[in-house]
Length: 157
Image (cartoon, rainbow, N blue to C red; front, side, top):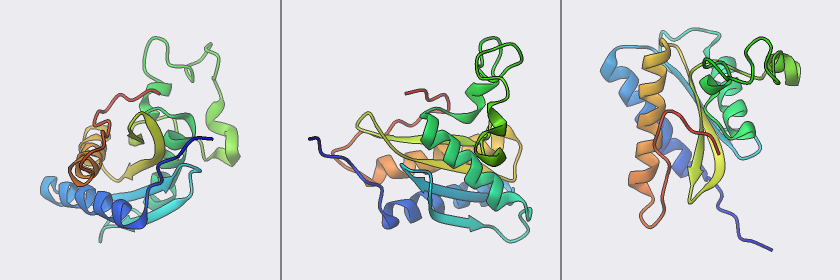
């Protein structure tokens, strides 16, 4: 039996606050969703003025990143993204009733080499969503002394 690390509400709130602060700093109304290792939301926040579709999209991105242990944009990145036409996972975005996101803005939360959840962003362009996601991961690293959080855009576990 092994001991698992679990993402808790206070940590998820800390991550969401950092993502939303970054979004405010760069002037883009974002929605952020932090999910547990099963893909279920711990925190879901939509900034004033953010798109009404943002909550579902952010959740889908976080769900996908946590469940598949990789940044969502890696699914369709040339040349070997598994969801690209002709590759092994082409059409995967139709899985889970269309909840599977294969575009930029979802990142697994990796603590001490274990995927403990995911963070999803919706509202900006890919670069803006990525900056906000990285801010959330960095905030968790800053909070968790004695643990190593993977702070990167391209994560594949």
